[in-house]
Amino acid sequence: MAGGRRPGRGLGVTAVVLLLAGAVLVTVGLVVGRGGHQASEVGSGSMDPTYRQGDRIVTEEVDGDDIRRGDVVLSSIPERVPEGLALQRVVALGGDRVAHRPGDDALMLNGRPLDEPYVRGGEPGDGMTSFDVTVPEGRMFLLGDNRGNSRDSRYFLSEQSGTVAVGAVRARVLDDWTVPVLLVAGGFAGVVLFLVGGGLGVASLVVGRRKAVPAPDWAAMPPPPVR
Image (cartoon, rainbow, N blue to C red; front, side, top):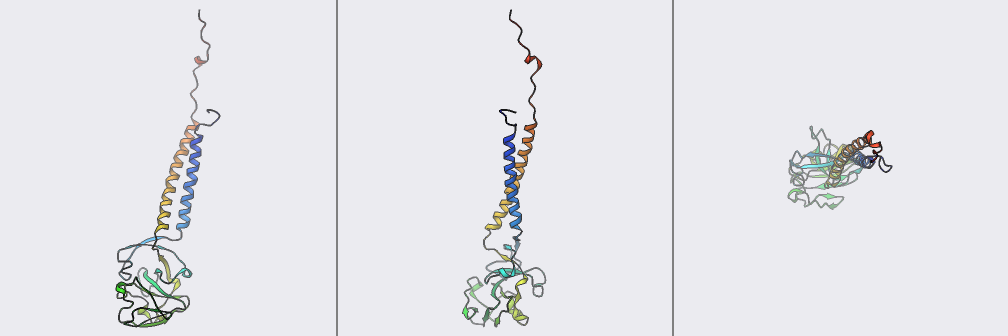
């Protein structure tokens, strides 16, 4: 030991700090990431031009109570989409009245025109389908943004007015990828810090156990007298 301090003590302290920081970042990433952020690929053109076939999207798991009008969601509707999930927009929720007739300039939601800047070509309908639906509680009315090429609630009006249970929602599409990107980056940073901290910890142990080389016996002998 030099100056009363154990050799390698500084390395050991740094190692502990890095290990703790790495563990915190990895844990936060895992815990928050369990919110179900996932990336997937759009498999059809029903949401064009908002999401085109082949586009990559990021989603988060949500409960039915968290669904809002205007959300684009992935829903499990096997009777309509036997394989995979349906990517569609929530136009109306429980208690809402949504209506449209061919030739109308806009969908009517609760008696007012619905502004839909996301619809392909600005066409609120497919030019053929007419509907006037009051959505039951706990359900939703889903439409694709590409109204001319979307197998959505309009074509299942005989089945509970085309509505779908909010419990069918598996995830909501995120427009802002900041959170999932930060989670991934933080997780990687945590792993790096953990590995570096582990390496410094090993180095600290090696330095601390290194013994000083003993001085030879002759070095302690008094010098011979000068004659």
